Structure formats: C-alpha cells, structure tokens
Length: 487
Image 1 (cartoon, helix red, strand yellow):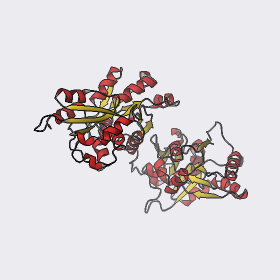
Image 2 (cartoon, one colour):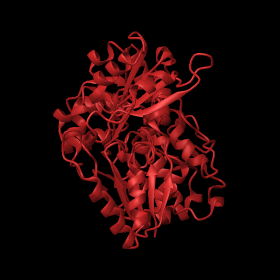
Image 3 (cartoon, one colour):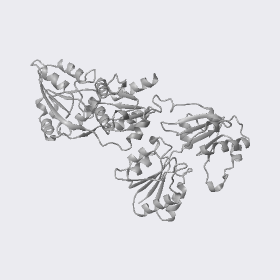
Image 4 (spheres, rainbow, N blue to C red):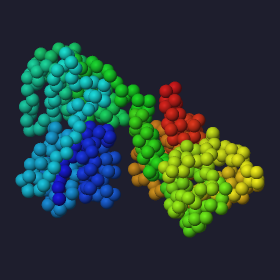
C-alpha cells in the first residue's frame, strides 16, 4: 500500500484538492496535525483510524522521529495511510523529512500538494501578494526555525534587500525580532504590514499595522504576516460575509444538517453540527409498504416533510401507481424532494404550516364532495391537519412513515455549546430533544426558529426566541439570521 503526504490547505476545508479528497476516501489510517481541519476526517471511511500527532505551542508534542516511525510502520503493515498536513506538505511542513524516512524504509509514498497559506491566507484577507508595478515578486520565509540554530539562518538583510512582498509563516512568536531585523536591514519602519490570524477560517482576524507597530498588537499563532506595499490593500471579501465569525449550532438530522451547515459556512458562519433528531423506520413498516402498493385508491397524498417523501417512495415500486392521485406538499423543501423523484406537487400552500395546507386543501373538494386522503408522516406529529380534514368530511388515513428519536448525547457538546452564539431549530422535535438531552441552560444566547410552530414549542420550554423565519424554510431561516445580525 501507499503512504500519502496530503496538503490539507490553510484551514478552509473546501480548499482541499480533489486528489486529497480521493485518497482520504480510501484511507485505512489518517494521521493529522493541529492545523489540519478535523472536519476533513469525515471524508475518510467511517471505520478509518484517526491518529492525532498535533503539536501544541508550548504544550504536548509528538516528536518528528515518532511521526516518521509511525508512518513507516503503518505503511509496512500494508495499510493505506493519509498523512494530513496543514498547507502544503513540502512548504515548511517537514513533509520532506517524512518522505525521506519512507524512502529509506522502502515504503511507497505519494505527495499530494496543498494550497499554501503563504498565498491563500493573504487572499482571504483581501491582500494580493503581487501587484503590477508596486510588487512584482514575493518571498516566503519561515519565522519558526529549528531552535538548535539559535538566531536562525534566515538572512533578514538579504530578504529586506530583495524588495517586493515578504510573507512570513509561523512568525507570530518572533514578530518583534523579525520586524526589528528588517528595519535594521533597511526597510522603512512605516512599511505596511498585516498579520492574518487563523486565516481562511470563520475566526479569521486581520491586524493591520506597520513594521514599527505590529509587535505592539501581539499577533497570536497561527498567523501569516505580510510585509510590503500590498499589505495596505484592503480588498476584503471573506470577513465581509453577512454571518462572518458567528458560531451557530445546527440541530437538524443528518444529512440535512450537513447541507444547512454548508449554507451557513458559505455566508461566513462557523457551523457546529449537533443533531438533536434522528430518523428510524416506523414500528410497523409493513403497513407503509401495503399502503404504498395500494396508493391508487386515494384522491390525495399529502406529504409533510422530505423524510416522509423518501420513506414512502422506498416502497413505491411503480410510479404509475400515482397516475390518478393528486399530490400535496407542505413546503418547497418537501416539493423539491418530490421533484427529485419526477413528481410535481399539485398543491403547495402559501404558508408552509399544516394550518395553511388544511385551508388550501379544503378548497379542492370535487363535485362528489371530500375524498380520500393519505398522509404518510412521522409516527408522532401534530394532528392539526388530519383532524381538520376529518372534521371537514374527508376520509383520512395517517400512516407512520418514520419515527423521530433523539440521538445519543455528544460528549464534546458542552465545550461546543459554551462557545456558540446561536442555535437553530427547524422543528418542534429538535427543540424537545435538544432541551431533554442537554438542558435549557446549555442553549446559546440567540435562539432562531424556522417558524411559529417551532417558536411556540421553544417558548413552552422556557426559551426566548430572538429570530423567527418569515419564510418557513431553511433558506428563510438563514435570511432571517442575516437580517438579525445586520440590524
């Protein structure tokens, strides 16, 4: 087998290369360091072994010798090993040493380059490392040399004389010394400088100063320091996104949680996936199968969730069975789930709640009066819709399509919740399960809900709702969050 030395990029998981994702998908073992984004581990198979060899500044560290030995041993054992390293494995990342150890041991290896923070982090801060006429070159220098070298081997006088842009990686701890050396070497003390901390991540912070003043701002690692005229450029885009820096908890079930988290991240938020709900088959799955096989005897099938659509269509073996049946969906998400199966909803109410669907469906009575309605839905749900239809004369069959259950508590939840600012609830079940599992005291300050029904449940559990979506969809909830923080 092969040991892959993979560059994970500077922090934003979407900057991982296609080749990096490909080898992660086949990994038996993932050996990762502190600057690698741990969410990338989800790209590996569920049974892959994860080994952290992260080096904490001033804290515990795994020696490079031990890392080399680990890679060699696992490679010789015939495992597919992915060594996930921050940035690029051959740019100040000691990937060369690991490759040399593997080569000496006769272990096959492959280098998968990554996007280096030397270029990506300034770009995320709105700083181009080169500009026509003002900076036609850039120099990348390490600010964290081998301690055995004493003052180090970097010729700062030569770096200063080169001109152009200077990018210093891992230089936060020696910031004052580096700036003093460059000034002593002839760079003007008022040369623009920017230090970008946690670059490309939702907690990115850009400090702007000069060579003479940067150290006074005390930049913290990990930081990328940009020195030169380009550091005065402020073409900010990443930090200007509407939800930048907000830490938000997503309580939806998987895989919907991942989709919502991705939408939040695209708007700059740090999304924490902490599902408060999971789906299981109903206690009597055969009943759903029998009903799906005989769906043609109904006038309407009403779907109240995408999950209900998915579970029902698992048992619908011939789409022609719906030929004479009209289909209603409670909202655009449910309608979209139908459309994915080439079924266009005949009816979607203006308001995406059961009350609105009840009112709209009541207007669809045929010349022979109310007909037969099938509602495949969660085993436990509000009865507003079936009770209202039955009261109006409809013949209603409610068939459980799935059960909602609370997942096991996340052992890391306390730390995640303590740092979060917002929690999002997309159903009453997420409210109930979350508060039952973690308690109301664990709920972050800002509570955001998808609509009035979920808000009512939240308030009944002692929560104060700060944000409620006007459009009762996930996109509507995200838009409401943007509006809330804009205000």
